[in-house]
Image (cartoon, rainbow, N blue to C red; front, side, top):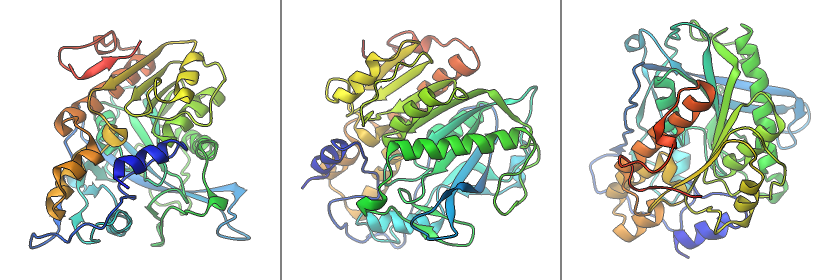
Length: 390
């Protein structure tokens, strides 16, 4: 079965296939060592900082871990920073997580080294006036919170606080004590979009803790200077990829704290039939309204500001980091051009980066900051591959 056929079969049940699922075992690298992956730099005026949070939801027992355990999540907080050069840059994922991702995808565990991000670990928060708008991110099925770092660090470099979440048991993640978790394939423990949405509502509560000056980290590890009290609870948005896009729709419908939602090719399964009056934008690739009845049904219930755009040549992972990372990995393992197209379609990775940087920023600027952008008014000569779907 080709990866594209596997992808389409997976999309049919509303899940996703990231780097963690591949149809074959790839050869070891012919290079003398692992390839050093790289990510594009953000374009905003501010350096960025980041910190990881270990969160425990004491209201939700963990049926997998057993009696006495509660649901644990890892989250990342990204923000505009000052004095960033004094703090080390964070890696895209910890080494153990990257090895698990590569192995599960059929790649050699040592084929690559995780890229460095633009986020500096623990750097102080930069404040240039009032509190900072907040955006929350939910990943796709069998994926992880770093999979849209290009978008996340772009938003942070323009003055947003972005909170990314690992949905435990449907993610690749590492806890502070060194435990590495991978997605559970047992249907008994399958995570639904509604479960992702419950995780996000819990994280929104923890965002309220940060805004009130409290430290929500389970071990109360030190937070970056200036983070507590810096978040604006009146300007919260959310975006998600694939299953996380569906979870975004559910959260925006159910939780008034989230003012605007963006879906990156979310299938909107199970079908959502609740009317929504708040702004919502869909960046589709394979889960188009023409191909996915549940996406069309959801669109019909959007009663407020709405927009559907689509990039020519995009496939399901094209609005995330895999669009630029997989081509780098392909060279190291001898992947054919045909196989590479199965991963990233025909959308040029450099163009995909510009789309990822420009359109989510324009959307959240409009609806959280009331900054008008002509980019969202209609087709742009700067982005000829981006189509507006009526």
